[in-house]
Image 1 (cartoon, helix red, strand yellow):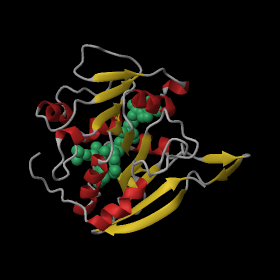
Image 2: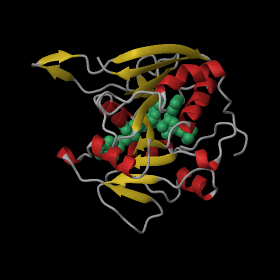
Image 3: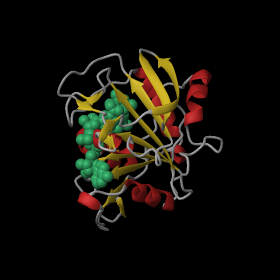
Image 4: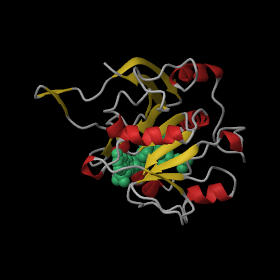
Length: 255
Ligand SMILES: NC(=O)C1=CN([C@@H]2O[C@H](COP(=O)(O)OP(=O)(O)OC[C@H]3O[C@@H](n4cnc5c(N)ncnc54)[C@H](O)[C@@H]3O)[C@@H](O)[C@H]2O)C=CC1
Ligand SMILES: Nc1nc(O)c(N)c(N[C@@H]2O[C@H](COP(=O)(O)O)[C@@H](O)[C@H]2O)n1
């Protein structure tokens, strides 16, 4: 891989992150089936909880140190998953540019794209795969199309025309994916924050900036118990560390 602005993490930064990453010693979400991959939910947000200036606007929040952290995380997972909204808006690379990363260590890019909104043709993902700098992407869709230059994992439609997250993750595990780094966007993050049984770790970069009103928030849906509103999600087993100007919060979804 060519040189990039991504630098190696220090050993103490790695030690900080490693308990939240897939490994034989890292526990899975309690009661999780062996048919599911280890799932790390990770994203960058502002002090007002926004992940983008507006829907569909690619917004740099991570500083150089947390960007390097993202590539360390990519190195540690079998797959990176984003929603079609992110794939269309951000034109992402979704490869691992960590120093020394070999092709064999590249994560499998996965786009959750029920209605085939995103096209591999003309995408950065497709180009990088052709150049040997990343793997050929997969899409998870409600219907297949064998003519495309993109492998499609087909899942059944569930209520409201959506795909059930457990089904999507089981499908990936059946394809040999043992760990998935979920990077976004808002729709995907907000859905998975409400699925503590599926998510093993959460790693959030908090940038010292406010994006302002009209931004796109990482904010799960309202949750009620017995008709009364309760917190939508909470992290347990938390730990914090500064990476450059940003704070990084690691935890596990739970009580
Ligand atoms: N700051 C950060 O760390 C990140 C920011 N972003 C930002 O997020 C924004 C994109 O967010 P969104 O528009 O919410 O798009 P998204 O990336 O969450 O994708 C939403 C789309 O994915 C599909 N999808 C997701 N879950 C589904 C399900 N359960 N069943 C069926 N289809 C499903 C649907 O097509 C849906 O329209 C962009 O502005 C991007 O820049 C994206 C990733 C990380
Ligand atoms: N960690 C993080 N910090 C930010 O500030 C971001 N905007 C994102 N976005 C995610 O990273 C993807 C871009 O990846 P490439 O550099 O193109 O490989 C983007 O699509 C979001 O998933 N992440």
